[in-house]
Length: 397
Image (cartoon, rainbow, N blue to C red; front, top):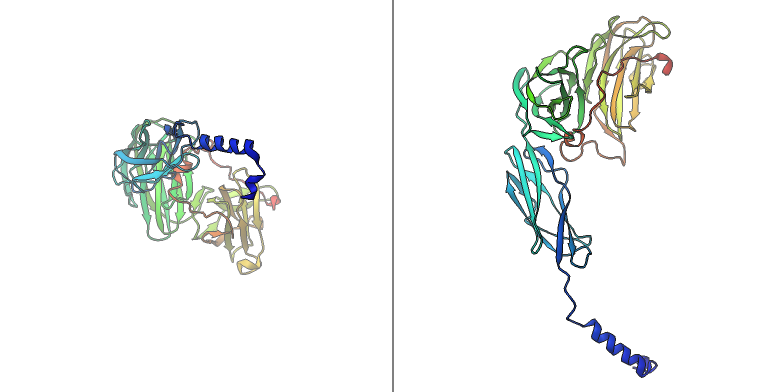
């Protein structure tokens, strides 16, 4: 043991003392002291769906530091839900999480987290009903304080299935409050909204041309914490555009229509007519649109929610001939856009074919479809009252 021969008797004595101190079994043991909620409380989602955020607790020990390795027992003490596991362990930060899937019964859900020696923590959630609304049917509903609430707005939900490309007219009517309506893909992506039918009618009417698929309607109110009876109707209608009325479209639809003198008009340097559609675009995707006509020189204009033209095209070989129009727009900012289907020549009118390709995701970008209904992340969103400006200018190309 040559290494110790150089320490001398004093140093060896210190080592003995330190050894005794380190092995002192009389020091108080660190135990769990407090447990708090960190995140996941007061969520709401559709029955049968998984909550968007896992429930998370944090445990602190008697030494004031994160408590590691504690076994948290989770249990459903109210409502219908299932847990990913009956227990989870606290990590090095003192945190433990649990994934919750709601059952088939709508209403309030309570989940409790317990740990020996500390006060239990309870999380609340709401399971939202979503009955089927068939095309060409009307249901009677009511916003109530027991409904799912998002950022202060009570909201109901209805499933809608469309078997073929179809024009639809979705209408919410209420006598006692200003209505609001949102449309989603059932898988989660936001598609469109409507506030007022016109300046004198506070009911909501969303007109759309949709691809086959499952959709989710979300009637609500323009003002927060509003309750009252309403009717929700879903009617089929021709997949057409007319009179400069905004029609929402989904990806993957084809429209055959005509530009007429009663459509939107740009009078900047003569009269240019156009139809208009609204589309909600997700950052990281690419919008591809073909506009073909044998009656006129086709032109396309895409404007963002601030009224700025972000893409336009007149003649493109990608559209089949040099007098047709084609846009391939990589979306940088998620939001609502207006697409004007117009002409390059003044006072031109006639028939056209419009094709909006299915979603294309850019390499390395976030997926358009996130887990769970996106409505539950966007429910607090309220656009300013009033309709989008339906104007554009050829000069902005």
